[in-house]
Image 1 (cartoon, rainbow, N blue to C red):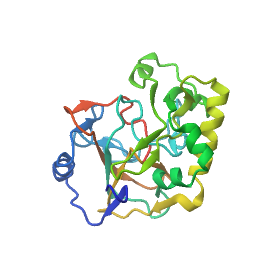
Image 2: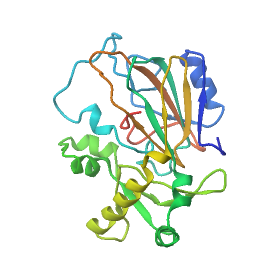
Image 3: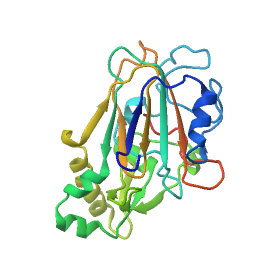
Length: 255
């Protein structure tokens, strides 16, 4: 994981208990909000309801496609989450890939003057402002409390010792900069990072577990016919240390 940042395991056990036991070997869990369909410690990122059938469209609020942008999981926590471990139970016959980017490679390809410019900057991550930029408005103040604006260094050192960018579509500003100026810089970095040459696109099959390091990568869901095909995907997310706690923004990211 330190070397590659993204690891694919074929034919993993399709057992929530095994998934949890394996994940906890590497760190304490970030816990999702209470669910009804699967183990309570696991994020449900499929399209199924409690009855195991496809959820009908919900015309109110954000749509699944609003989240099909490159991001890192849970940037609303005080510390970036360590790894996410996503396990495929049922996969659509077409579409629904997950795309990954190694942000260390992106950082190393940035012009020297850009790396010098961003070395000590902090980016602000705000789900609601990011959705507003995509034309989606929230009126739920309780949800806003669950997704606080959080700042993180724009440049981090990864577990391998290589420097990396830490950003995603949730990043909406630079601490100490004007809104327009900060967003312009982040948009430029996002465009640079999401060029095709940096993307690994994973085509899922049942039994695949993909592990990625949120501290040095971005990922994005890709479209599929979600009201025709079932997709049962289950994710654990772990932190570097500390107790097992509920994460801010639990379940906000589509993967």
